[in-house]
Image 1 (spheres, rainbow, N blue to C red):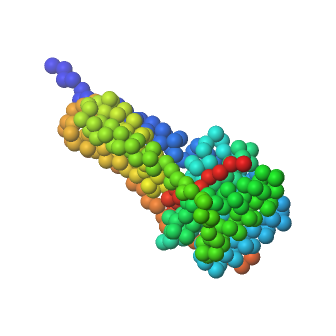
Image 2 (cartoon, rainbow, N blue to C red; image 1 turned 90 degrees about the vertical axis):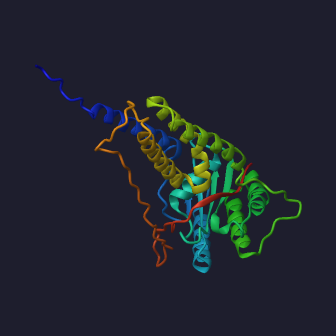
Length: 307
């Protein structure tokens, strides 16, 4: 009498791993790989070629001295293209990738300029939001940088903007009374409702069997991802979403709603692990041109403008 061979669970596991890999690629494409973030090499990185060498050296020297005096890290970056992304999104990606500011203080600032799109943004780290508010950042963009840019004086505009940022942090610069508050974080009104919707989708996915539930989980986490990015920054927001995805998959298996249905125990689970090493902070002194961030993160504060 012939006996049926045991069912090989490998195809089912391969499907699970395949869906997980697909989901990770979706998140990566959404959050990390849209804009090619360059390597941080110095405080002033003029990739758009709008500044004179003399201005770059002058601002670099000022920022190095300011950092030695206050420990606050300010970086200036000009980009030849935003790659069809928003200036706000690119600024957050660059800020978080460069880890501007000290890890324990979050005292970094990024001034990013996109001359082809005629846009700019001042992005402020969490630790400096009290010293450099959204109102003050808007005032600097509008009154210090924009007039020079409109007259095609890029050197003068960037110099004036950097000087005003440093003066504001020192408490020596304040916006005029007729300035109105801007929503530097301004996406909060959008990301919180979408985060709630994403959370609902993710919760419902726990009770939907087989592939339908996985699709609901992916949709829910993609919708909630902007909220994670807003709260934790793009890199850690992605990590939180991935961890939540693994947790949801684990809970679905416990509820018997894994891919292919079927309760029962499985000896080969899928687990992921991540580690976020602490970044070392280097001020790039002793004549060295190398410079790196210390592990700070952005909070979305600041202001944008165009000319």
